[in-house]
Image: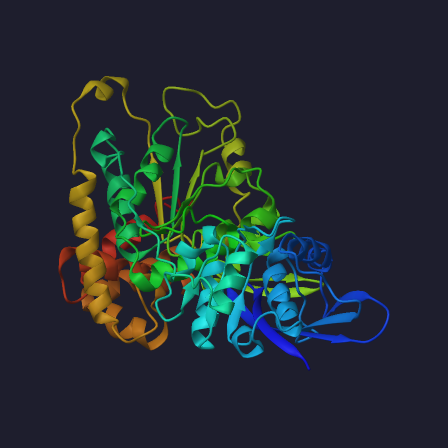
Length: 503
């Protein structure tokens, strides 16, 4: 008779159900695992044999065959140890077969039978809930998986504890969800001296999730401004927190099973590879753009990133997801992020500084900024110059609105958008397109005349035209206006043309 247990195989953030079938038959003693396993899965035989030996359970002198179905789905990772052990114990009649068949399990076994934490407990719990099965995972993963209320989650420390639960000798208590992690924000926008236009642009960007490019001399405050951006972003909604945490679970970034309600803020170095930014490597893991899902991707020294990496950003920015295509896998990850880029105006950095001479004016700036292609530049909703701050101004007391004040305005603007787009796939103004964009962002007659004039004069693309409308809609929401008017369009156009050569 074939005994069954269940586990999952990961395809992006999706955890696909895998049936673990085990049978014993007369013949030469052997332990075979089939069903497209990788090296880590194949090595489970020795770990399981040692773990059972630690429980004084000897394998019979028979041919043991384990099949991982569907057989054409690649199986990767050490988390297959525990479900294979469950199916084998059921085949040996150590645990009831009907009980083992009602479990989804994942976990790596040590040689002494203890369970080692693995990645992906949260998406596995989602699949277990859909299949109406109980989830068994290592104790270190229990707090993470227990965030899925619909699934019964048990987190034993050892294989022996799981065995005693199955036999009824020592039932396990369901795991409890981890704590909601509060991330204090110590950096305040009031600490930034001057740069009022840049602060305003970041407020608009945060309110509508628009992409921003900041260009300025070294030390003008670009990184300082970006570091304060997380403080004005609203916390993740429960649905967004679950989406984001599933990605972070696959990347092993959830600490102690806690769910973080703060929006992700990722800042990769400009030497990062394409696999690190977009995703890939062994197992096609999520990259920085997916780890920044529902949050911010800050790319400092933007032109210094490789041309291939920069051009690869174009499609994810538009679609909100990325397909990591490899010879043996095509994995889709969500990546709806806000891109904040910072750049010097030229290689030496002082092209626009009147107090310092750039030795290669104007070629230095043209060559440097041309590393950002036109199609990629066209995807930035707001482009701002960040001029240097006078040294005497650095001694002035803090000025401008605090982070808390700006965050209140941003939260109110996001609430307006949530109410407007309730029941739709749209979450913020940056998602507007097609008929929805025309319905809510069409300006009044004066505003439309201004936009058409600017589009004709500076040759805005259709994408640029629509992005101006989205930014104008966000400015109107911050202003508390029901309709987009000429002042809103004028401000949005000003951010669009700030770095254009024609101006």
